[in-house]
Amino acid sequence: MSPTPEPPTPEPRDALLNAEKAAFDAAFSERRWQDATRERMAGLYFRAVAALGAAGYDIRASNARTDETLSPALNYETLELIAKVCRQAVSKMGDDTPALVEVAAESFMALEAVQAILEGWDSESEDEGVRTAKLILLGSQMGMFSSILAQWETGQIDAAAANAWKLYRQGEAQRGRVASWEQSFLPHAVADCEGRTHVTLASLVRLAKEWAGAERAAGRNPGLPGTDDGIERGIKRMERRAVLTIPGRSKVDGGGSA
Image 1: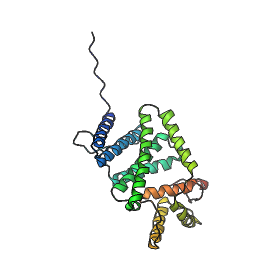
Image 2 (image 1 turned 45 degrees about the vertical axis):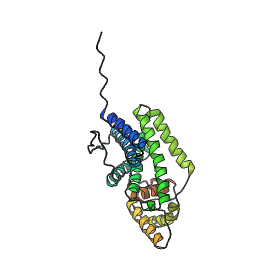
Image 3 (image 1 turned 90 degrees about the vertical axis):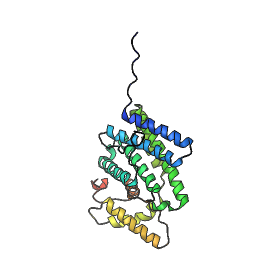
């Protein structure tokens, strides 16, 4: 009788995800909510790292943990940097961005936004009600991104994950919700772009912050996102809705540079 074959050695990433799930289950059952949140965020981080790695983008997970698995540097500054790189890559590829890359990039942006709240970088979240609402919405986003990336891990990315992402984007457009700060800031952005040959997203982000500062000084809550990435995504939404033309960047100008 032939010997029983040894089970295959799991891939390092699979071991990490299994360790994350076990740690999450233990923390959740013991009501250690902060630890459970950290483990769930770590799981999405590793899935997004693997997805970008498969697309040719190498983001290294580091920092040894005492249980000999790996834990990402889940701090705001690190996630902000990764999200910025992802945003630049997606902006450069535009409509040609593969669904897998876009889902992974959005995962990092969601992780960055949550970490900004947890570390106190998000000024909007000083109000407990706003903080709770934003964490609930971001948690829902992260769950969706994790589900799509899990479909990729099981070999369904071409059909299920890409289609799920397409449906999400269609639903986003159909919902048509416009943030109040985008509506209020839009005239200032339009005026800043008029008569100029080149305007950068970074300069519009700075303008939005100056506008928000003036609004707060006048006793009004502008509702501006607490991170540069959040502000930039809002400006890009204005661009996609064709209510804002950014000279040197918008497609109608034949641009596209950041």
